Length: 222
Image (cartoon, rainbow, N blue to C red):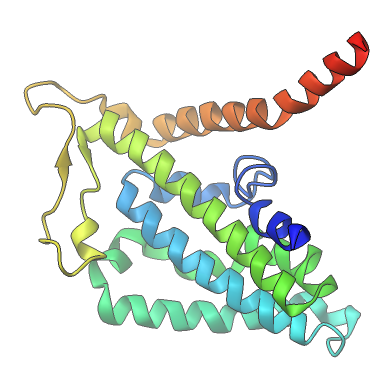
């Protein structure tokens, strides 16, 4: 049971695909100008991660090693096509916001990397848990980055969430910084994205290395 929990939670922080493994940085920087975009991209990637990991784990003894990468990409592309058609049909505003980065999930290094490094070597349940954990970690990172950039750069939070949740009005947003205060607009541009990404990566590194340093100090004192 503990092993299953470890597989699931690895992607949250210790092996966070963006902040620790530095994978999927292109969509991370591109879509996180708003927190709601991060939710949409994260959920889409999580669906593809879980489904492709399950299928690749099922077929891991059938797929010849010489053509495994093309086979993985074919499986991933199938699920990405399903996601893209669903988003186009039911969430057209989100489809416009994510643009080309939605179909580019096919070549997202996070998904292909987990297929190669985990799903092709482990059972179905572990592969599904790994995909879910990595997807949650990816989504969490996107939402945190999007929230920081949106609040500082536009003064609002969760603008556009109405495109994901039909029960909310289409123009839903939370005004965090008063409109009378000029927002720090650079945060919604590329330099702001790189700055927030660097700060979060440094924070994740500190959080994961601090217990090891503390243990080393205690061991040395003993």
